[in-house]
Length: 256
Image (cartoon, rainbow, N blue to C red):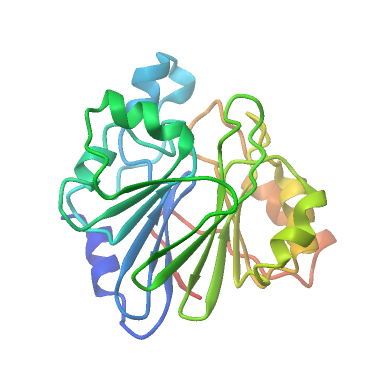
């Protein structure tokens, strides 16, 4: 078991914790001790599938699939750094974990010869309950390459954590998103490639959402993906000084 997994398991009960696993991967631990994973990338499968050095994993592996037993796992779309084909079967190998996967993950599940038991395929507008977690799936604009991608608003312990999924800037959807509540934590991409928001757009979106805390993601894992965390820091401190943000190091925990 990795040191990071031990940190997740020993994080104090009674508070809501958010852990960064790298790329767009996060773990939420509820006050009651239940675990939710979103878009974990734990392997090297992207480079293997793409056959391109631009997709070589540049961040270390801090968690192995067998280290933790999750109550729920969310995959916002089928791209391999969100639906890790080398990790998901292991994450689902017990009788407990429930997988909430975007509709475009069906083919991957079939190819992996996984059973559909404990799998719910989700789309925009759906709400699912899993233990301490309420999952509200919302619009996500990841372009024509992943039209079925979703974002997820996690409600837990009277907190709201909005993981936008991979998406471009859509200010026209802000009012709709706000009907779910103002996020205590907003997690959004800054890489500006493959149809995602860049550093400036993420900051604009956080401001429009009145997010209490913004956590940038989707940078540092692959050379081909881009994302300048220094640039995001400059934009937030100069243009949005009243907005709180946290640039989470891989393996870092914050309490929401």
